[in-house]
Image (tube, rainbow, N blue to C red; front, side, top):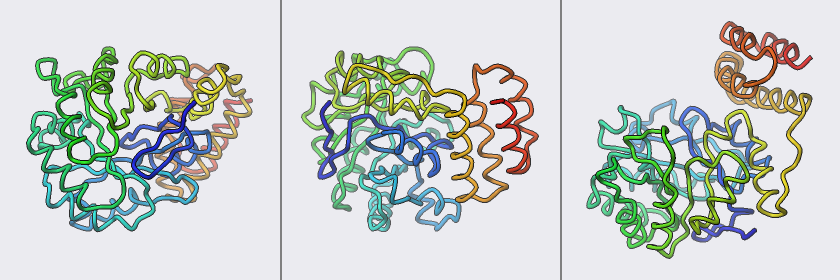
Length: 321
């Protein structure tokens, strides 16, 4: 299993936690890093929010020494604001600056940001050139197959990115129109890999160690990015690294190990965000961690009524009895 180098940053391995809004916060990234992720990607941050000193954005920018190397992801559509804000935050301890061209949600797309930029190659060139010139850290970009099936221009965008000095490109094999439904097209990842010399990271439908191996083999990509499959399952990084290195997958976590992970996750949330926010943000994670377990449906019904850390702890203890 080869190491992956992005610009001047060499990762422990080529298995990467994808950026996910509302999911890849600091506590979750720490767990995934401890479980073996070679790189963790932060939730996307609005360049305009940094510009206007939005107080909620400060929390999104927080980085723990233990999670480094971390990739900080910006989104926006104004080249000048993006470059200026990248310069403003460059001293923060992230290792790689990523630019988001993949987010499909309407409020982002309708603002001409995220995956809407797949329709604007000229603007993409301006943005990426400005970002690369603004900072000394490696700049990467995350794109989709295209905006819709009639406009699958990932190869064109990848060539533009490379010509601008971008250090690596992550390709999600779905169009914006697909959101996260249907099957990801891995062939577009192969096409991008053949079109550029910079590292290409494949994303989409990597939901097991075996699928990570299959993506690397079938596309020739340099790394794999795991997103939704890590929700409630940070062990997927340990398992995938093991599979790629040795061809074997460790036994799945037993109940006690799962319980320890959940309580550790909740404790991180408590330390970083305080009880009120921690308990509420853990609700979705608890649902993911316990999916498929006996009595999990009833447990999920009680999750949303949890108000205190003590209630959360008792609930977790009860389902793992």
